[in-house]
Amino acid sequence: MGIYNSEGIVLNKIPFSNTSLIVSYLTEAYGKVKLVCRGVRGSKKQSGVHFEPGSLVHLEWYKKDTSDLGTLRNCDTSKVFRRLWEDYDSMQVALRIIKITDRLFSSSDAEIVNYNIFKNALQSIESGLVPKNVECTFLLGEIIALGFAPTLNYCEECVSGNNRKRVYFNLENGELRCLDCKLSSEHVVKLSQGTIMTINESFRKNIYEIHDMKIITQIQEEIIRLGYYFLSYHSGINLNTIMEK
Image 1 (tube, rainbow, N blue to C red):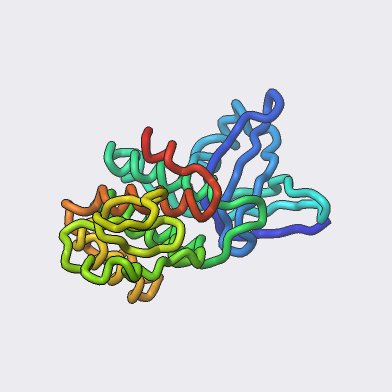
Image 2 (tube, rainbow, N blue to C red; image 1 turned 90 degrees about the horizontal axis):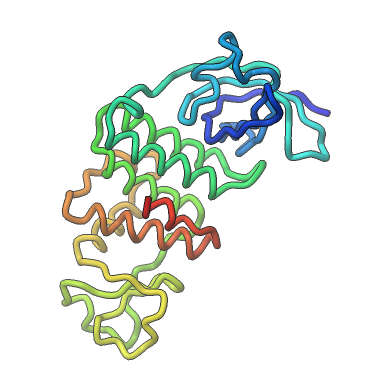
C-alpha cells in the first residue's frame, strides 16, 4: 500500500453508500485516479467545492498496488474557476471538456501534457477567452498530445484538391480528398480550406501555447465537430454524444 499526493482537477463524482462518494480526478503526477471519499455526503464540513467537477485541488490518498480504487486522506481546494459556472456558454464548454477528459482516460492513464492541456483550457475560459475558441484549441491539443495528429496531405487521386474551397477529410488515415474523389467516402467529414490552414498552424505551435490561438468564429463549429469525430474514431471511445448534448 502506498500514500500519494498531487495537484488534481475533479472530473466526476458518484454516490457510494449512504455517506460517501467515489470521485474521479485527473492528477498532475499520477494521471486519472478514482478515490473513495468517506463520510462526505451531507457533511457541511467536508462537502462543497472539494468534490465539484472543475475544482482545482491538492489531494492525498492511499491505495493498494493491486487496486485501481484508492481512498482519500485529505483534500484542499486550491482554486474554483467561478466563471465556468457563472456564464452559461462557459459552463457548457467547460462541462464538455471535463466529460471528454473523463472518458478519454482510464485509471492511472494520462500524461502530464494531458493534464496541462486540460488545466490550461479551464484557466483560459476563466480568464475570459471565447469558450468555443478554447474548445477548439483543447481538442486540437489533445489530438497532438495523444499522437493522433494527421498529415493533412492530399491522396494521389486528388492532386488538384488543394484548389477547392471544401474537401473531404478521411478520419482513418488523415488524408484530404477532393469532393470528386473516386476512393471510398466512408469515415469522412467536409472541411473548408480555412479549417485546414488553422489545423496546420496549430500543429506547428508549441503545445503549451496552443490556447493562445485565435480561431475565427466561422470555422469554430467545424473544428469542434472534426475534433470529436477524430478523437472518437482513433480512441475507440464515443465522444460524439457529448457534442450532441
